[in-house]
Image 1 (cartoon, rainbow, N blue to C red):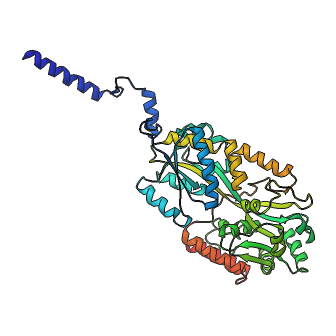
Image 2 (image 1 turned 180 degrees about the vertical axis):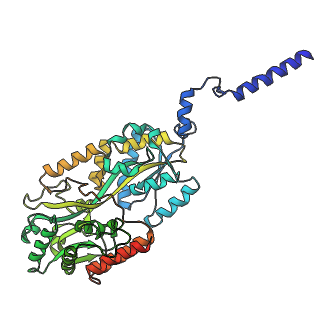
Image 3 (image 1 turned 90 degrees about the vertical axis):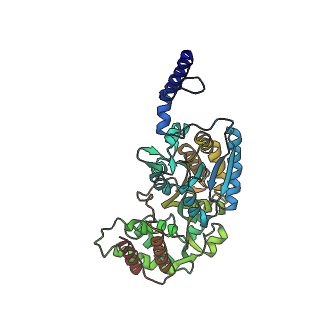
Length: 427
C-alpha cells in the first residue's frame, strides 16, 4: 500500500509541474519562449497547421468587369504562392452594411480590400490585424508614402496600399488648340482668360458627373479654401462669410458653360467634340476611353492633356483580427503588390499602382510615349488627402448643394454659403 501511495503522489507532482511550467510542450519538446512572447503581442501570427488550413477568404466590392480581371490575377498569385483562396464580391450598395455586420461577430473573412480612408477607423475599433506582425513588414516601405499614411495608426501599419485612382481635369490637345488653349488652366487668371475665349463660342466648357460629389469636390478644390466641401472644415466655426469674391465671380461665369451628366463622362474624340472642352473624371476612365494612353498609336499631334485634381481615391488590403490564416494571407497580399501583378492590374483595370517603383515606371511610360502632357505629380495638392465625408447625412446635403450649383439652380455665392451652413449645423 505504501508503494501505491508513492506512485500516486509522484503522478500528482508530475501533473502539477506540467500545468505550472510555461515552457513545457505537451508534445514533449520545449517551446521557444522568445517566440511565444512575440505571438502574445500579435496572437494570430501563426497560421493553422497544414492539416487544419482552410482557404483564405478575400472580400472585395467591384463591378463585374473589374472583378473578372481581379479574379484572374488573384488566382494566378494564389497558385504561385501556394495559397488556397476563396473570393467574394459584395454588391456596392450593401458592401458597407455587410462588412459592419460580419466584423461585429468576427466572421468577415481573412482579407478585405478597403477604401484606404476607412482603414484607420476599422483599426481603432479593433477589427484589423497589424501588418507589422507578418512577412509584409519587409515590404511596407515600398508603397507610395502619401497612400501609406492613410493606413497608419498608433505606430502600426494596418493596411497595404494596392491601387489608387485620382480625379483628373482632361482635354484632347486638338480640341484644346481649336479653343486657343495651350495648357490646362492652372490658376484663377488662366480660368478667366479661358472664359473670355469661351464667350465667343457655343460649345460647353466643362463636363462632370453631378452624382459624384467627390468629382465635384476635386474640381472645386482648384479655386481655393472654402469652395470645396472638403476644405470647409478648416474654416473657423464663428465665420459666416467665406470664399474670395473674385473666385465666386469666376464660378458664376463658368456655371452657364457646365454640362452636367448623370454618369462619368467618356473620354474620346467624338465625346469631347459633342460635350465640352474639359472633363472631370477618374484617371481609369481616361484610360478606358483613350486608346492612345492605353498602348495604341495615335496622331502625335493629338495628345491627351490632363492634370490630377485634389481628391485621391485609393484602396488597401487589410487582414481582419479574426483571421486564423494571417501568414497565408500576407503571402498572397505580397504577391498582389509584386511588380508583375501591379503592372497587370494597371494595364487591364486601369488603376494606378500603389507601389512607388511601379508607379514611377508607368508614369515614365506615359511621358516617354508622347501621349501625356502633365500628370506626373499625382499628389501635387497639399489638401489632396482630405475626405469629403464627415457623416453620410452631411455628404447627402453637400451633394444636393453641389448639384444645384452645377445645374444652375443657385449661384456660386449661394452654394458657398450653403456648404458653410451645412458644416456649422453638424457641430
